[in-house]
Length: 434
Ligand code: HEM
Image (tube, rainbow, N blue to C red; front, side, top):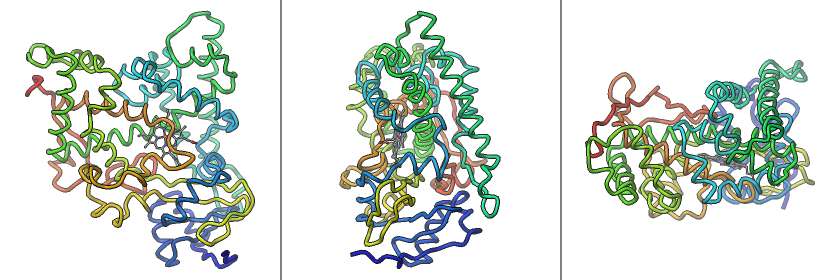
């Protein structure tokens, strides 16, 4: 049954600006103000429907005509202009290949910064080894990834300064990767990296550059954000901190039984060495406690609002009609912070996942567009957390010792910084069993 035209609208043009500034509050306010689980608002010239509830969510995740790339490109504007969504099927095929065990284990572990780790895993050895180049890429990706608030009102047809900057940044990224492909192709030097695999597989130039440009956007920031939050929560929750450290120590002992017995053998280098001796299956099957912590952090500190555009004919969601060409948004908080599914939802409590059903967990997305890089992301985060816990003692601080659980700012949908400016104090450990 369709109730055409009865969908409630909310927010005037001024108020919709806050969709870009405080998206979490904007959507919560909209559902409250309309007393409805679905409402629509106008975002410059586009109609956007915000949905909630499990029935609407299921359609949202499963419906083939709801297109993620067109949604992002128009509403958020973070997809590089030269990346044609049609080459993405080639990209995903490759992403599956680089996440095969024999490939994944050798590529990921080098430096302890997630951005560099993701760049290494999805692009070229030469870029990942070049500090200045990695810093430049990080600088450009931060611009591409920043919220691009378009101009509203009579000037809405002008792209705006932020959009022009994004265009400049994505062109710069394009040039870096394009040169890397060019140099590799004509230098006749072979490397053991993803760029080489793509060239050897005779993928198109567009697919290769698109792969290297697009995946850091999909994965580098979220891996850094979730990885940092795992560390923040662990530095506050002593029980989990000790549990995970013990688990990592046991894993190291299993593969390098002599390492962890002497204080003399303890150094940053020896920790790297010990962690690299752990095979992929060890990381994937022998860290159940760390798995729970990552899962709970994906629930608690991921302020994602999924965006789609209806590229098919009119579509019915929760008895309402979504016109062709319209946008639909689904805030992950509707599920992840829902007390009916997760009692006391603001509490970071990894143990809850030992008992709750995993079926509807949307930390990695759902349905058709489920995250394609979760294996790489999990391994990257585990390496960072394991190294940090072995090398340092952590304490959450905000000028002094933090007494209340750190709160992720869900309005900061890109970096999800702690609300009270909390950070981590690292103090070097003196031995494996210190
Ligand atoms: C902790 C880190 C990560 C988190 C939390 C995460 C989360 C997600 C989520 C929630 C989605 C679905 C988005 C939606 O429905 O709107 C998604 C999609 C995707 N992710 Fe990730 N992701 C992470 C890391 C990565 C990495 C490292 C890569 C690859 C290098 C990656 C590649 C992708 C791709 C390609 C998609 C789109 C899938 C599709 O269109 O079918 N992600 N991710």
